[in-house]
Length: 112
Image (cartoon, rainbow, N blue to C red):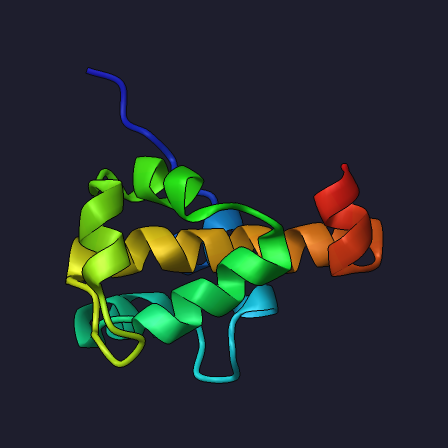
C-alpha cells in the first residue's frame, strides 16, 4: 500500500474559498455570522429592505424562499423568519455584497 505525504503548506478548511469570501463580505464577527444570524432569524423588515435594494418583488422572493405569496404578505415587519428562510435571505445578502463589489453600486448590480 502506498503511503501519502502530507504537504506542510496544505490549506486548512478555514482557508477554503467560501470561508475567505464570507470573511471579506461579512460583518467583523467573522464567517460564523451567517449561521448565528440564521439561527436568530431575520426580520421581515430586513427582507423588505433587501428586496428594495435588489429590485425584486414579493412574488419573486416567495419563489426563492419556497413560501406562498399570501404567507409572506401576512408577515408583519417585526416577524422573525425561521432559520431556513433566514439562511436564504442571508445568501441574498452575500450576493448583494458581492454584486456591489463587482459592479461598484447596488444600482449597477440591479441593472445587470
